[in-house]
Length: 471
Image (cartoon, rainbow, N blue to C red; front, side):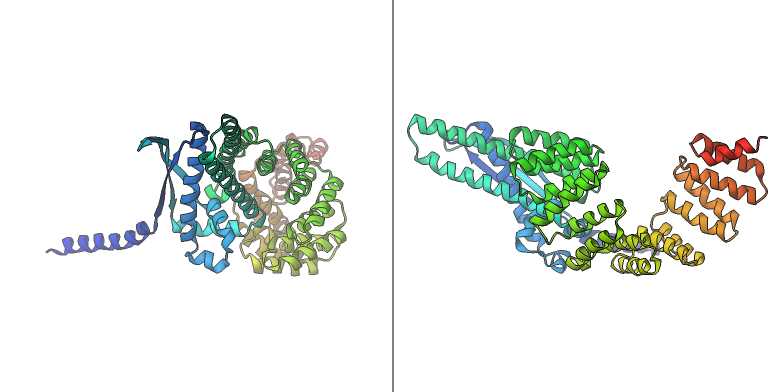
């Protein structure tokens, strides 16, 4: 065998060895359900029941496998969280569904599959486990489906024992209600899959609203679907519409703590801080250990110009969940900045970055605190790191250029303005300040071009300068 042939063989073997384990890691869980039609069950009812049973069975088996993964073991996931976790990070697909006739028994056959690739799961699992409210909602959804299937099982037992026409009529009505609930659950899960970035890496709230609405039409008391649709409207920038759904969910359950929290967020987006705080207060009355509610109530107090009151809430949030508090530390740091305590703020930004070294916002805010302490070079290091983590953040470029300008480095400032304006051509202030830098470099014509653009975008100071300096 020639050296070329041997090299080709070794390369092929290497590729097989490298590819083999990765391919072997992908697992498929396939479950078949045959749902017979009882005398009181319609074909549509049987179909809805078979779909739910098949999906649940496939997901349960996939959940057992999830338990064996290192990432799940490291997080010490509770047993009753496993199915919800599986639902949040895996997609269940129906691959077959058709009528069947077996020994004179007619029914619906459904086959569902779950494809599990551990290579893409770790990030999804970590993100979902860090989002406790989201996981809790998934658990509530799974519990609702289990209750509906248990109700169907009881109805099937009754169906085997009933004989009178009146009893059969009542049973048909009960089957229809349970089947509507299961179909609503299926629409909800479809909406969730479109809306949930943990599963797909992106979100489509517009389509999710359509699916959530289908679920609500079938089951008007489905409070989780109302909450989810409200959240989708919130993501679409329609907080007032979201509030209508949260109101309806709270009419169904006045102790629905998460609905108060979400409605508070919607009021905050409308700038109605006091109403937002009232909802956060109610949520915390129902669950005094909700660290997230303390954090967002702190944000509301900060927006109301009450940084000291905000700090008290941030303290509570950190005390309750110290290991998940990176974002709370930077919020508290910002509050200390508002109180004119940049050194204390820096300590909080340090804490945030210890918990999450990739937190670009914390680097930017710490840089601004260093500026307040008269340390522009140290600030620039933080801005540099923030831009390494998020090179498309136009505003960080504009912030960093301030320090270059302060250090009499107009050329470097101009480079940052260029970057910022490439990313966001609507930053009027960046045009105006780049014009200042060009003036400092003795390039008045280029400065005038930038001032004109800034004036067109509504920068009044640039308009005033152009009036005072006609060509």
